[in-house]
Image (spheres, helix red, strand yellow):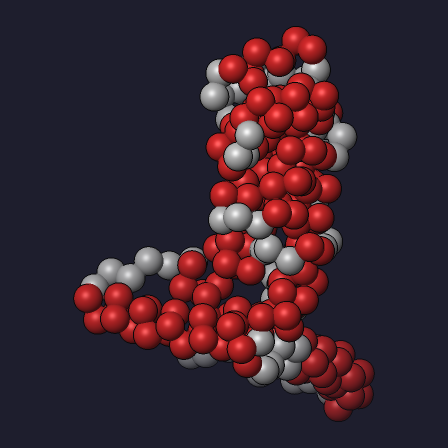
Length: 228
């Protein structure tokens, strides 16, 4: 015999609970309809330039695994590069918008933009931003050796910015070449070494380049002028 009494909820109690349930439902519906912003502004924008950046960005994050994937990847890349060629200035403005708020400690986000910066990072404004990051003051992590094998995030980010400057300098961009030479005065030793290497590689007059670099380098590092 079941002696369990039925559970009864009075109407007054239910009416007091109802507003709380309605509030939960309202909040849930409100949050589910709002998507968080993407990592970079151009990923949420429309138009040929933004869509070409989106295609190249997405393809840089994953490698094709099959021949069909590779064929599709190549087709998207050809189409995206054609769109960028027709809308280069707009694409560079969108890329600069994504790059501008980053610091040298945003290494992972700089890596995410690397392929686009190699393709489009030769505008004066983007080159100036990369140079500014490479030349910025050392962070506490960079200034104090940690004894760990992994370099600090800031050092990795700084070195990546210098590598992008070097890429465009080697491509023949005169502004990138001038900024690479100036980077020999960076507070970061890895950046100074990279600046010497790329400047000597692209210079038509090695002795003139050595003199210019020597004016930027600390006296104790001028041996680098004869190392590369």
